[in-house]
Image (cartoon, rainbow, N blue to C red; front, side):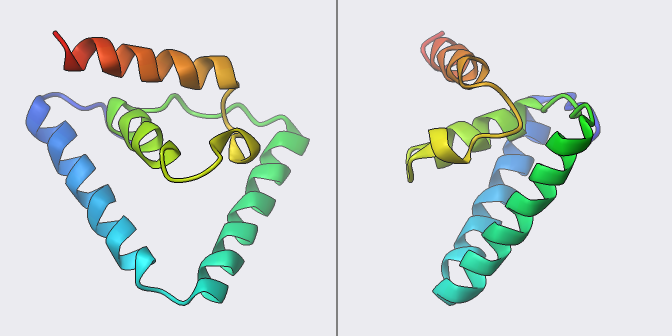
Length: 98
């Protein structure tokens, strides 16, 4: 993923993620569950092979933090440690109130 150079890039990526979320929300439950399982299996393969994950962009971090409010994220979190995720949340909170 390319480095985000400006606030407009960040907002564009957030808008695209929001549109993807809306599109996915309209899909049947079984299709969404199948995709979720498929993605979890891919992550399991990465973890099994000990492939180092790429660094997340600010837009990806913010999207993950926003999505975490919709479900029990601790069970699904595999690409980063929970402490890292909480640190991202705190960083976003500080940026919001700056």
